[in-house]
Length: 382
Ligand SMILES: [Fe+2]
Image (cartoon, rainbow, N blue to C red; front, side, top):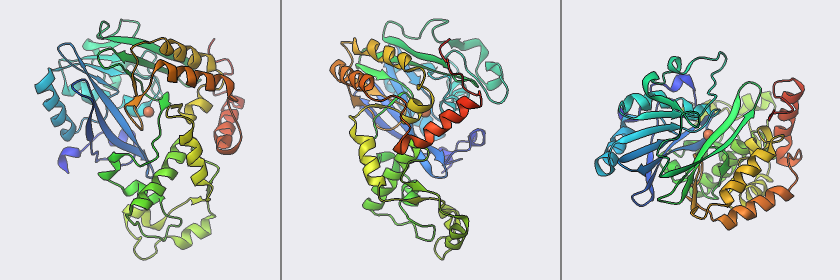
């Protein structure tokens, strides 16, 4: 479909590459809208969300996704009803997947201000913002140069935390009119059922629902659910305990089977084998209350900076107007009261921090490796 084209995909070659379908939903009537697309590697695709918030005189785009023609058409519809896009916010310093769509979105709305989180970094070389496509005349730095719509939004900083190669920093805001806290990666609510976005393209689910490369992709509700459980474990822990990588000769023997010789099934290559314990692991991942710290961040960003996270949560727990959380991934809006936050805080203070067992083992090894190699500092807050 021409209007789902995203020509900048080679900058960050994630599934579904040059074609991005967008699911638009109204989250809070006349106040908040969600624009979701899929992104991932080797069909490990999770939804990524841009949130559109109504502000005085128009709209704010928070954490933009790829501005395809399809997406722009739907945004123009919203502009017709609620006024022009007034500001575009890049609320993270580290999430590359959220950063790349910003310059193209800024070009699509030449009248909008662009706000970025301080300490933007590019890899492998540090480049100035205009070189990365951010418009020099109308780009401002959040915090250092104020905040957009400061009388309608309350801004809270999570970080910065020094990660060696760059830094982790998120700027979150409470949208007072809806009572929704907008954030990027820090908190997630992983749903038990596959997100609706996969109705537009269930391929990633069906791909991972199989046990071997020579099985065909079969579309049933149960296969979709199984694929979703595995995808969520994958995206959360990178290498969950229930996942094995079969030996290469076995992989190749199962490849190129009849019915699987298509690019859609990667020609029958499926380099994973799942133990039955994956179902319990998924239940554990989704059972710890609706909202949790994203496991990858908990284990790779916060292990030596827990205090930053706790302080941020304590600030939020004091907000009488807080009703919802809208993260940039997985479920939204997630109902959340100050009481829920206190419970989350208690749980985080009492649990063992930076675990290394079970599903956490791979992330813990990665953390130890980066620390030993001197890539990440052991005192990230100094
Ligand atoms: Fe993200």
